[in-house]
Length: 185
Image 1: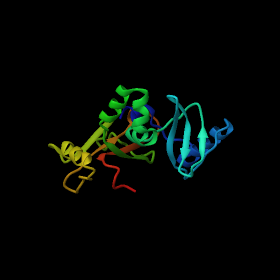
Image 2 (image 1 turned 180 degrees about the horizontal axis):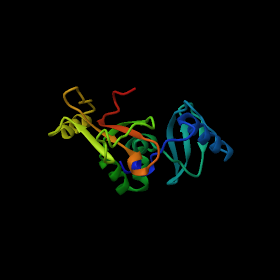
Image 3 (image 1 turned 60 degrees about the vertical axis):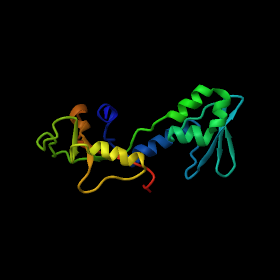
Image 4 (image 1 turned 90 degrees about the horizontal axis):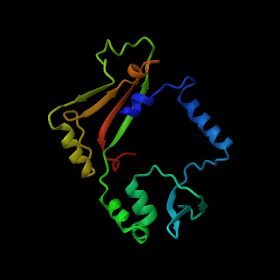
């Protein structure tokens, strides 16, 4: 929530132009983009990261590997608990004990300048729309079983209004959680 309130913005040139500018900057710094490429394994030798192996079998060597993949997937599947145990048994146990937080789906929407969020009752930075009671707990239980518990009678979502705290053009982010990733495409 804080990242939305503290860092949300509406790019002047539009969202597509923003990603194109990031790509341009990355390439100008010597980066190479490989779209539709799957990393199969994080390479570790003598306790140090050496790079990544792609699903194609190609190996890319690097001093650093940064991943935004689920940490349990990265550590257990891409590095391997056997490799981690050989380096640090205590850390391997921490990986085993990690309990993932829920996933969410965020939909960020830029609004017309004339829309007055305060007049619509969205006068705080974070608004919750829920069926109440133990809704979130029940949705979380379903999430842990890998099930989607949302129905038209059970839902919990947040409506974040970053522009009310950061200023600028009106925008909202609708956040739906908890959502298991297993059934989403």
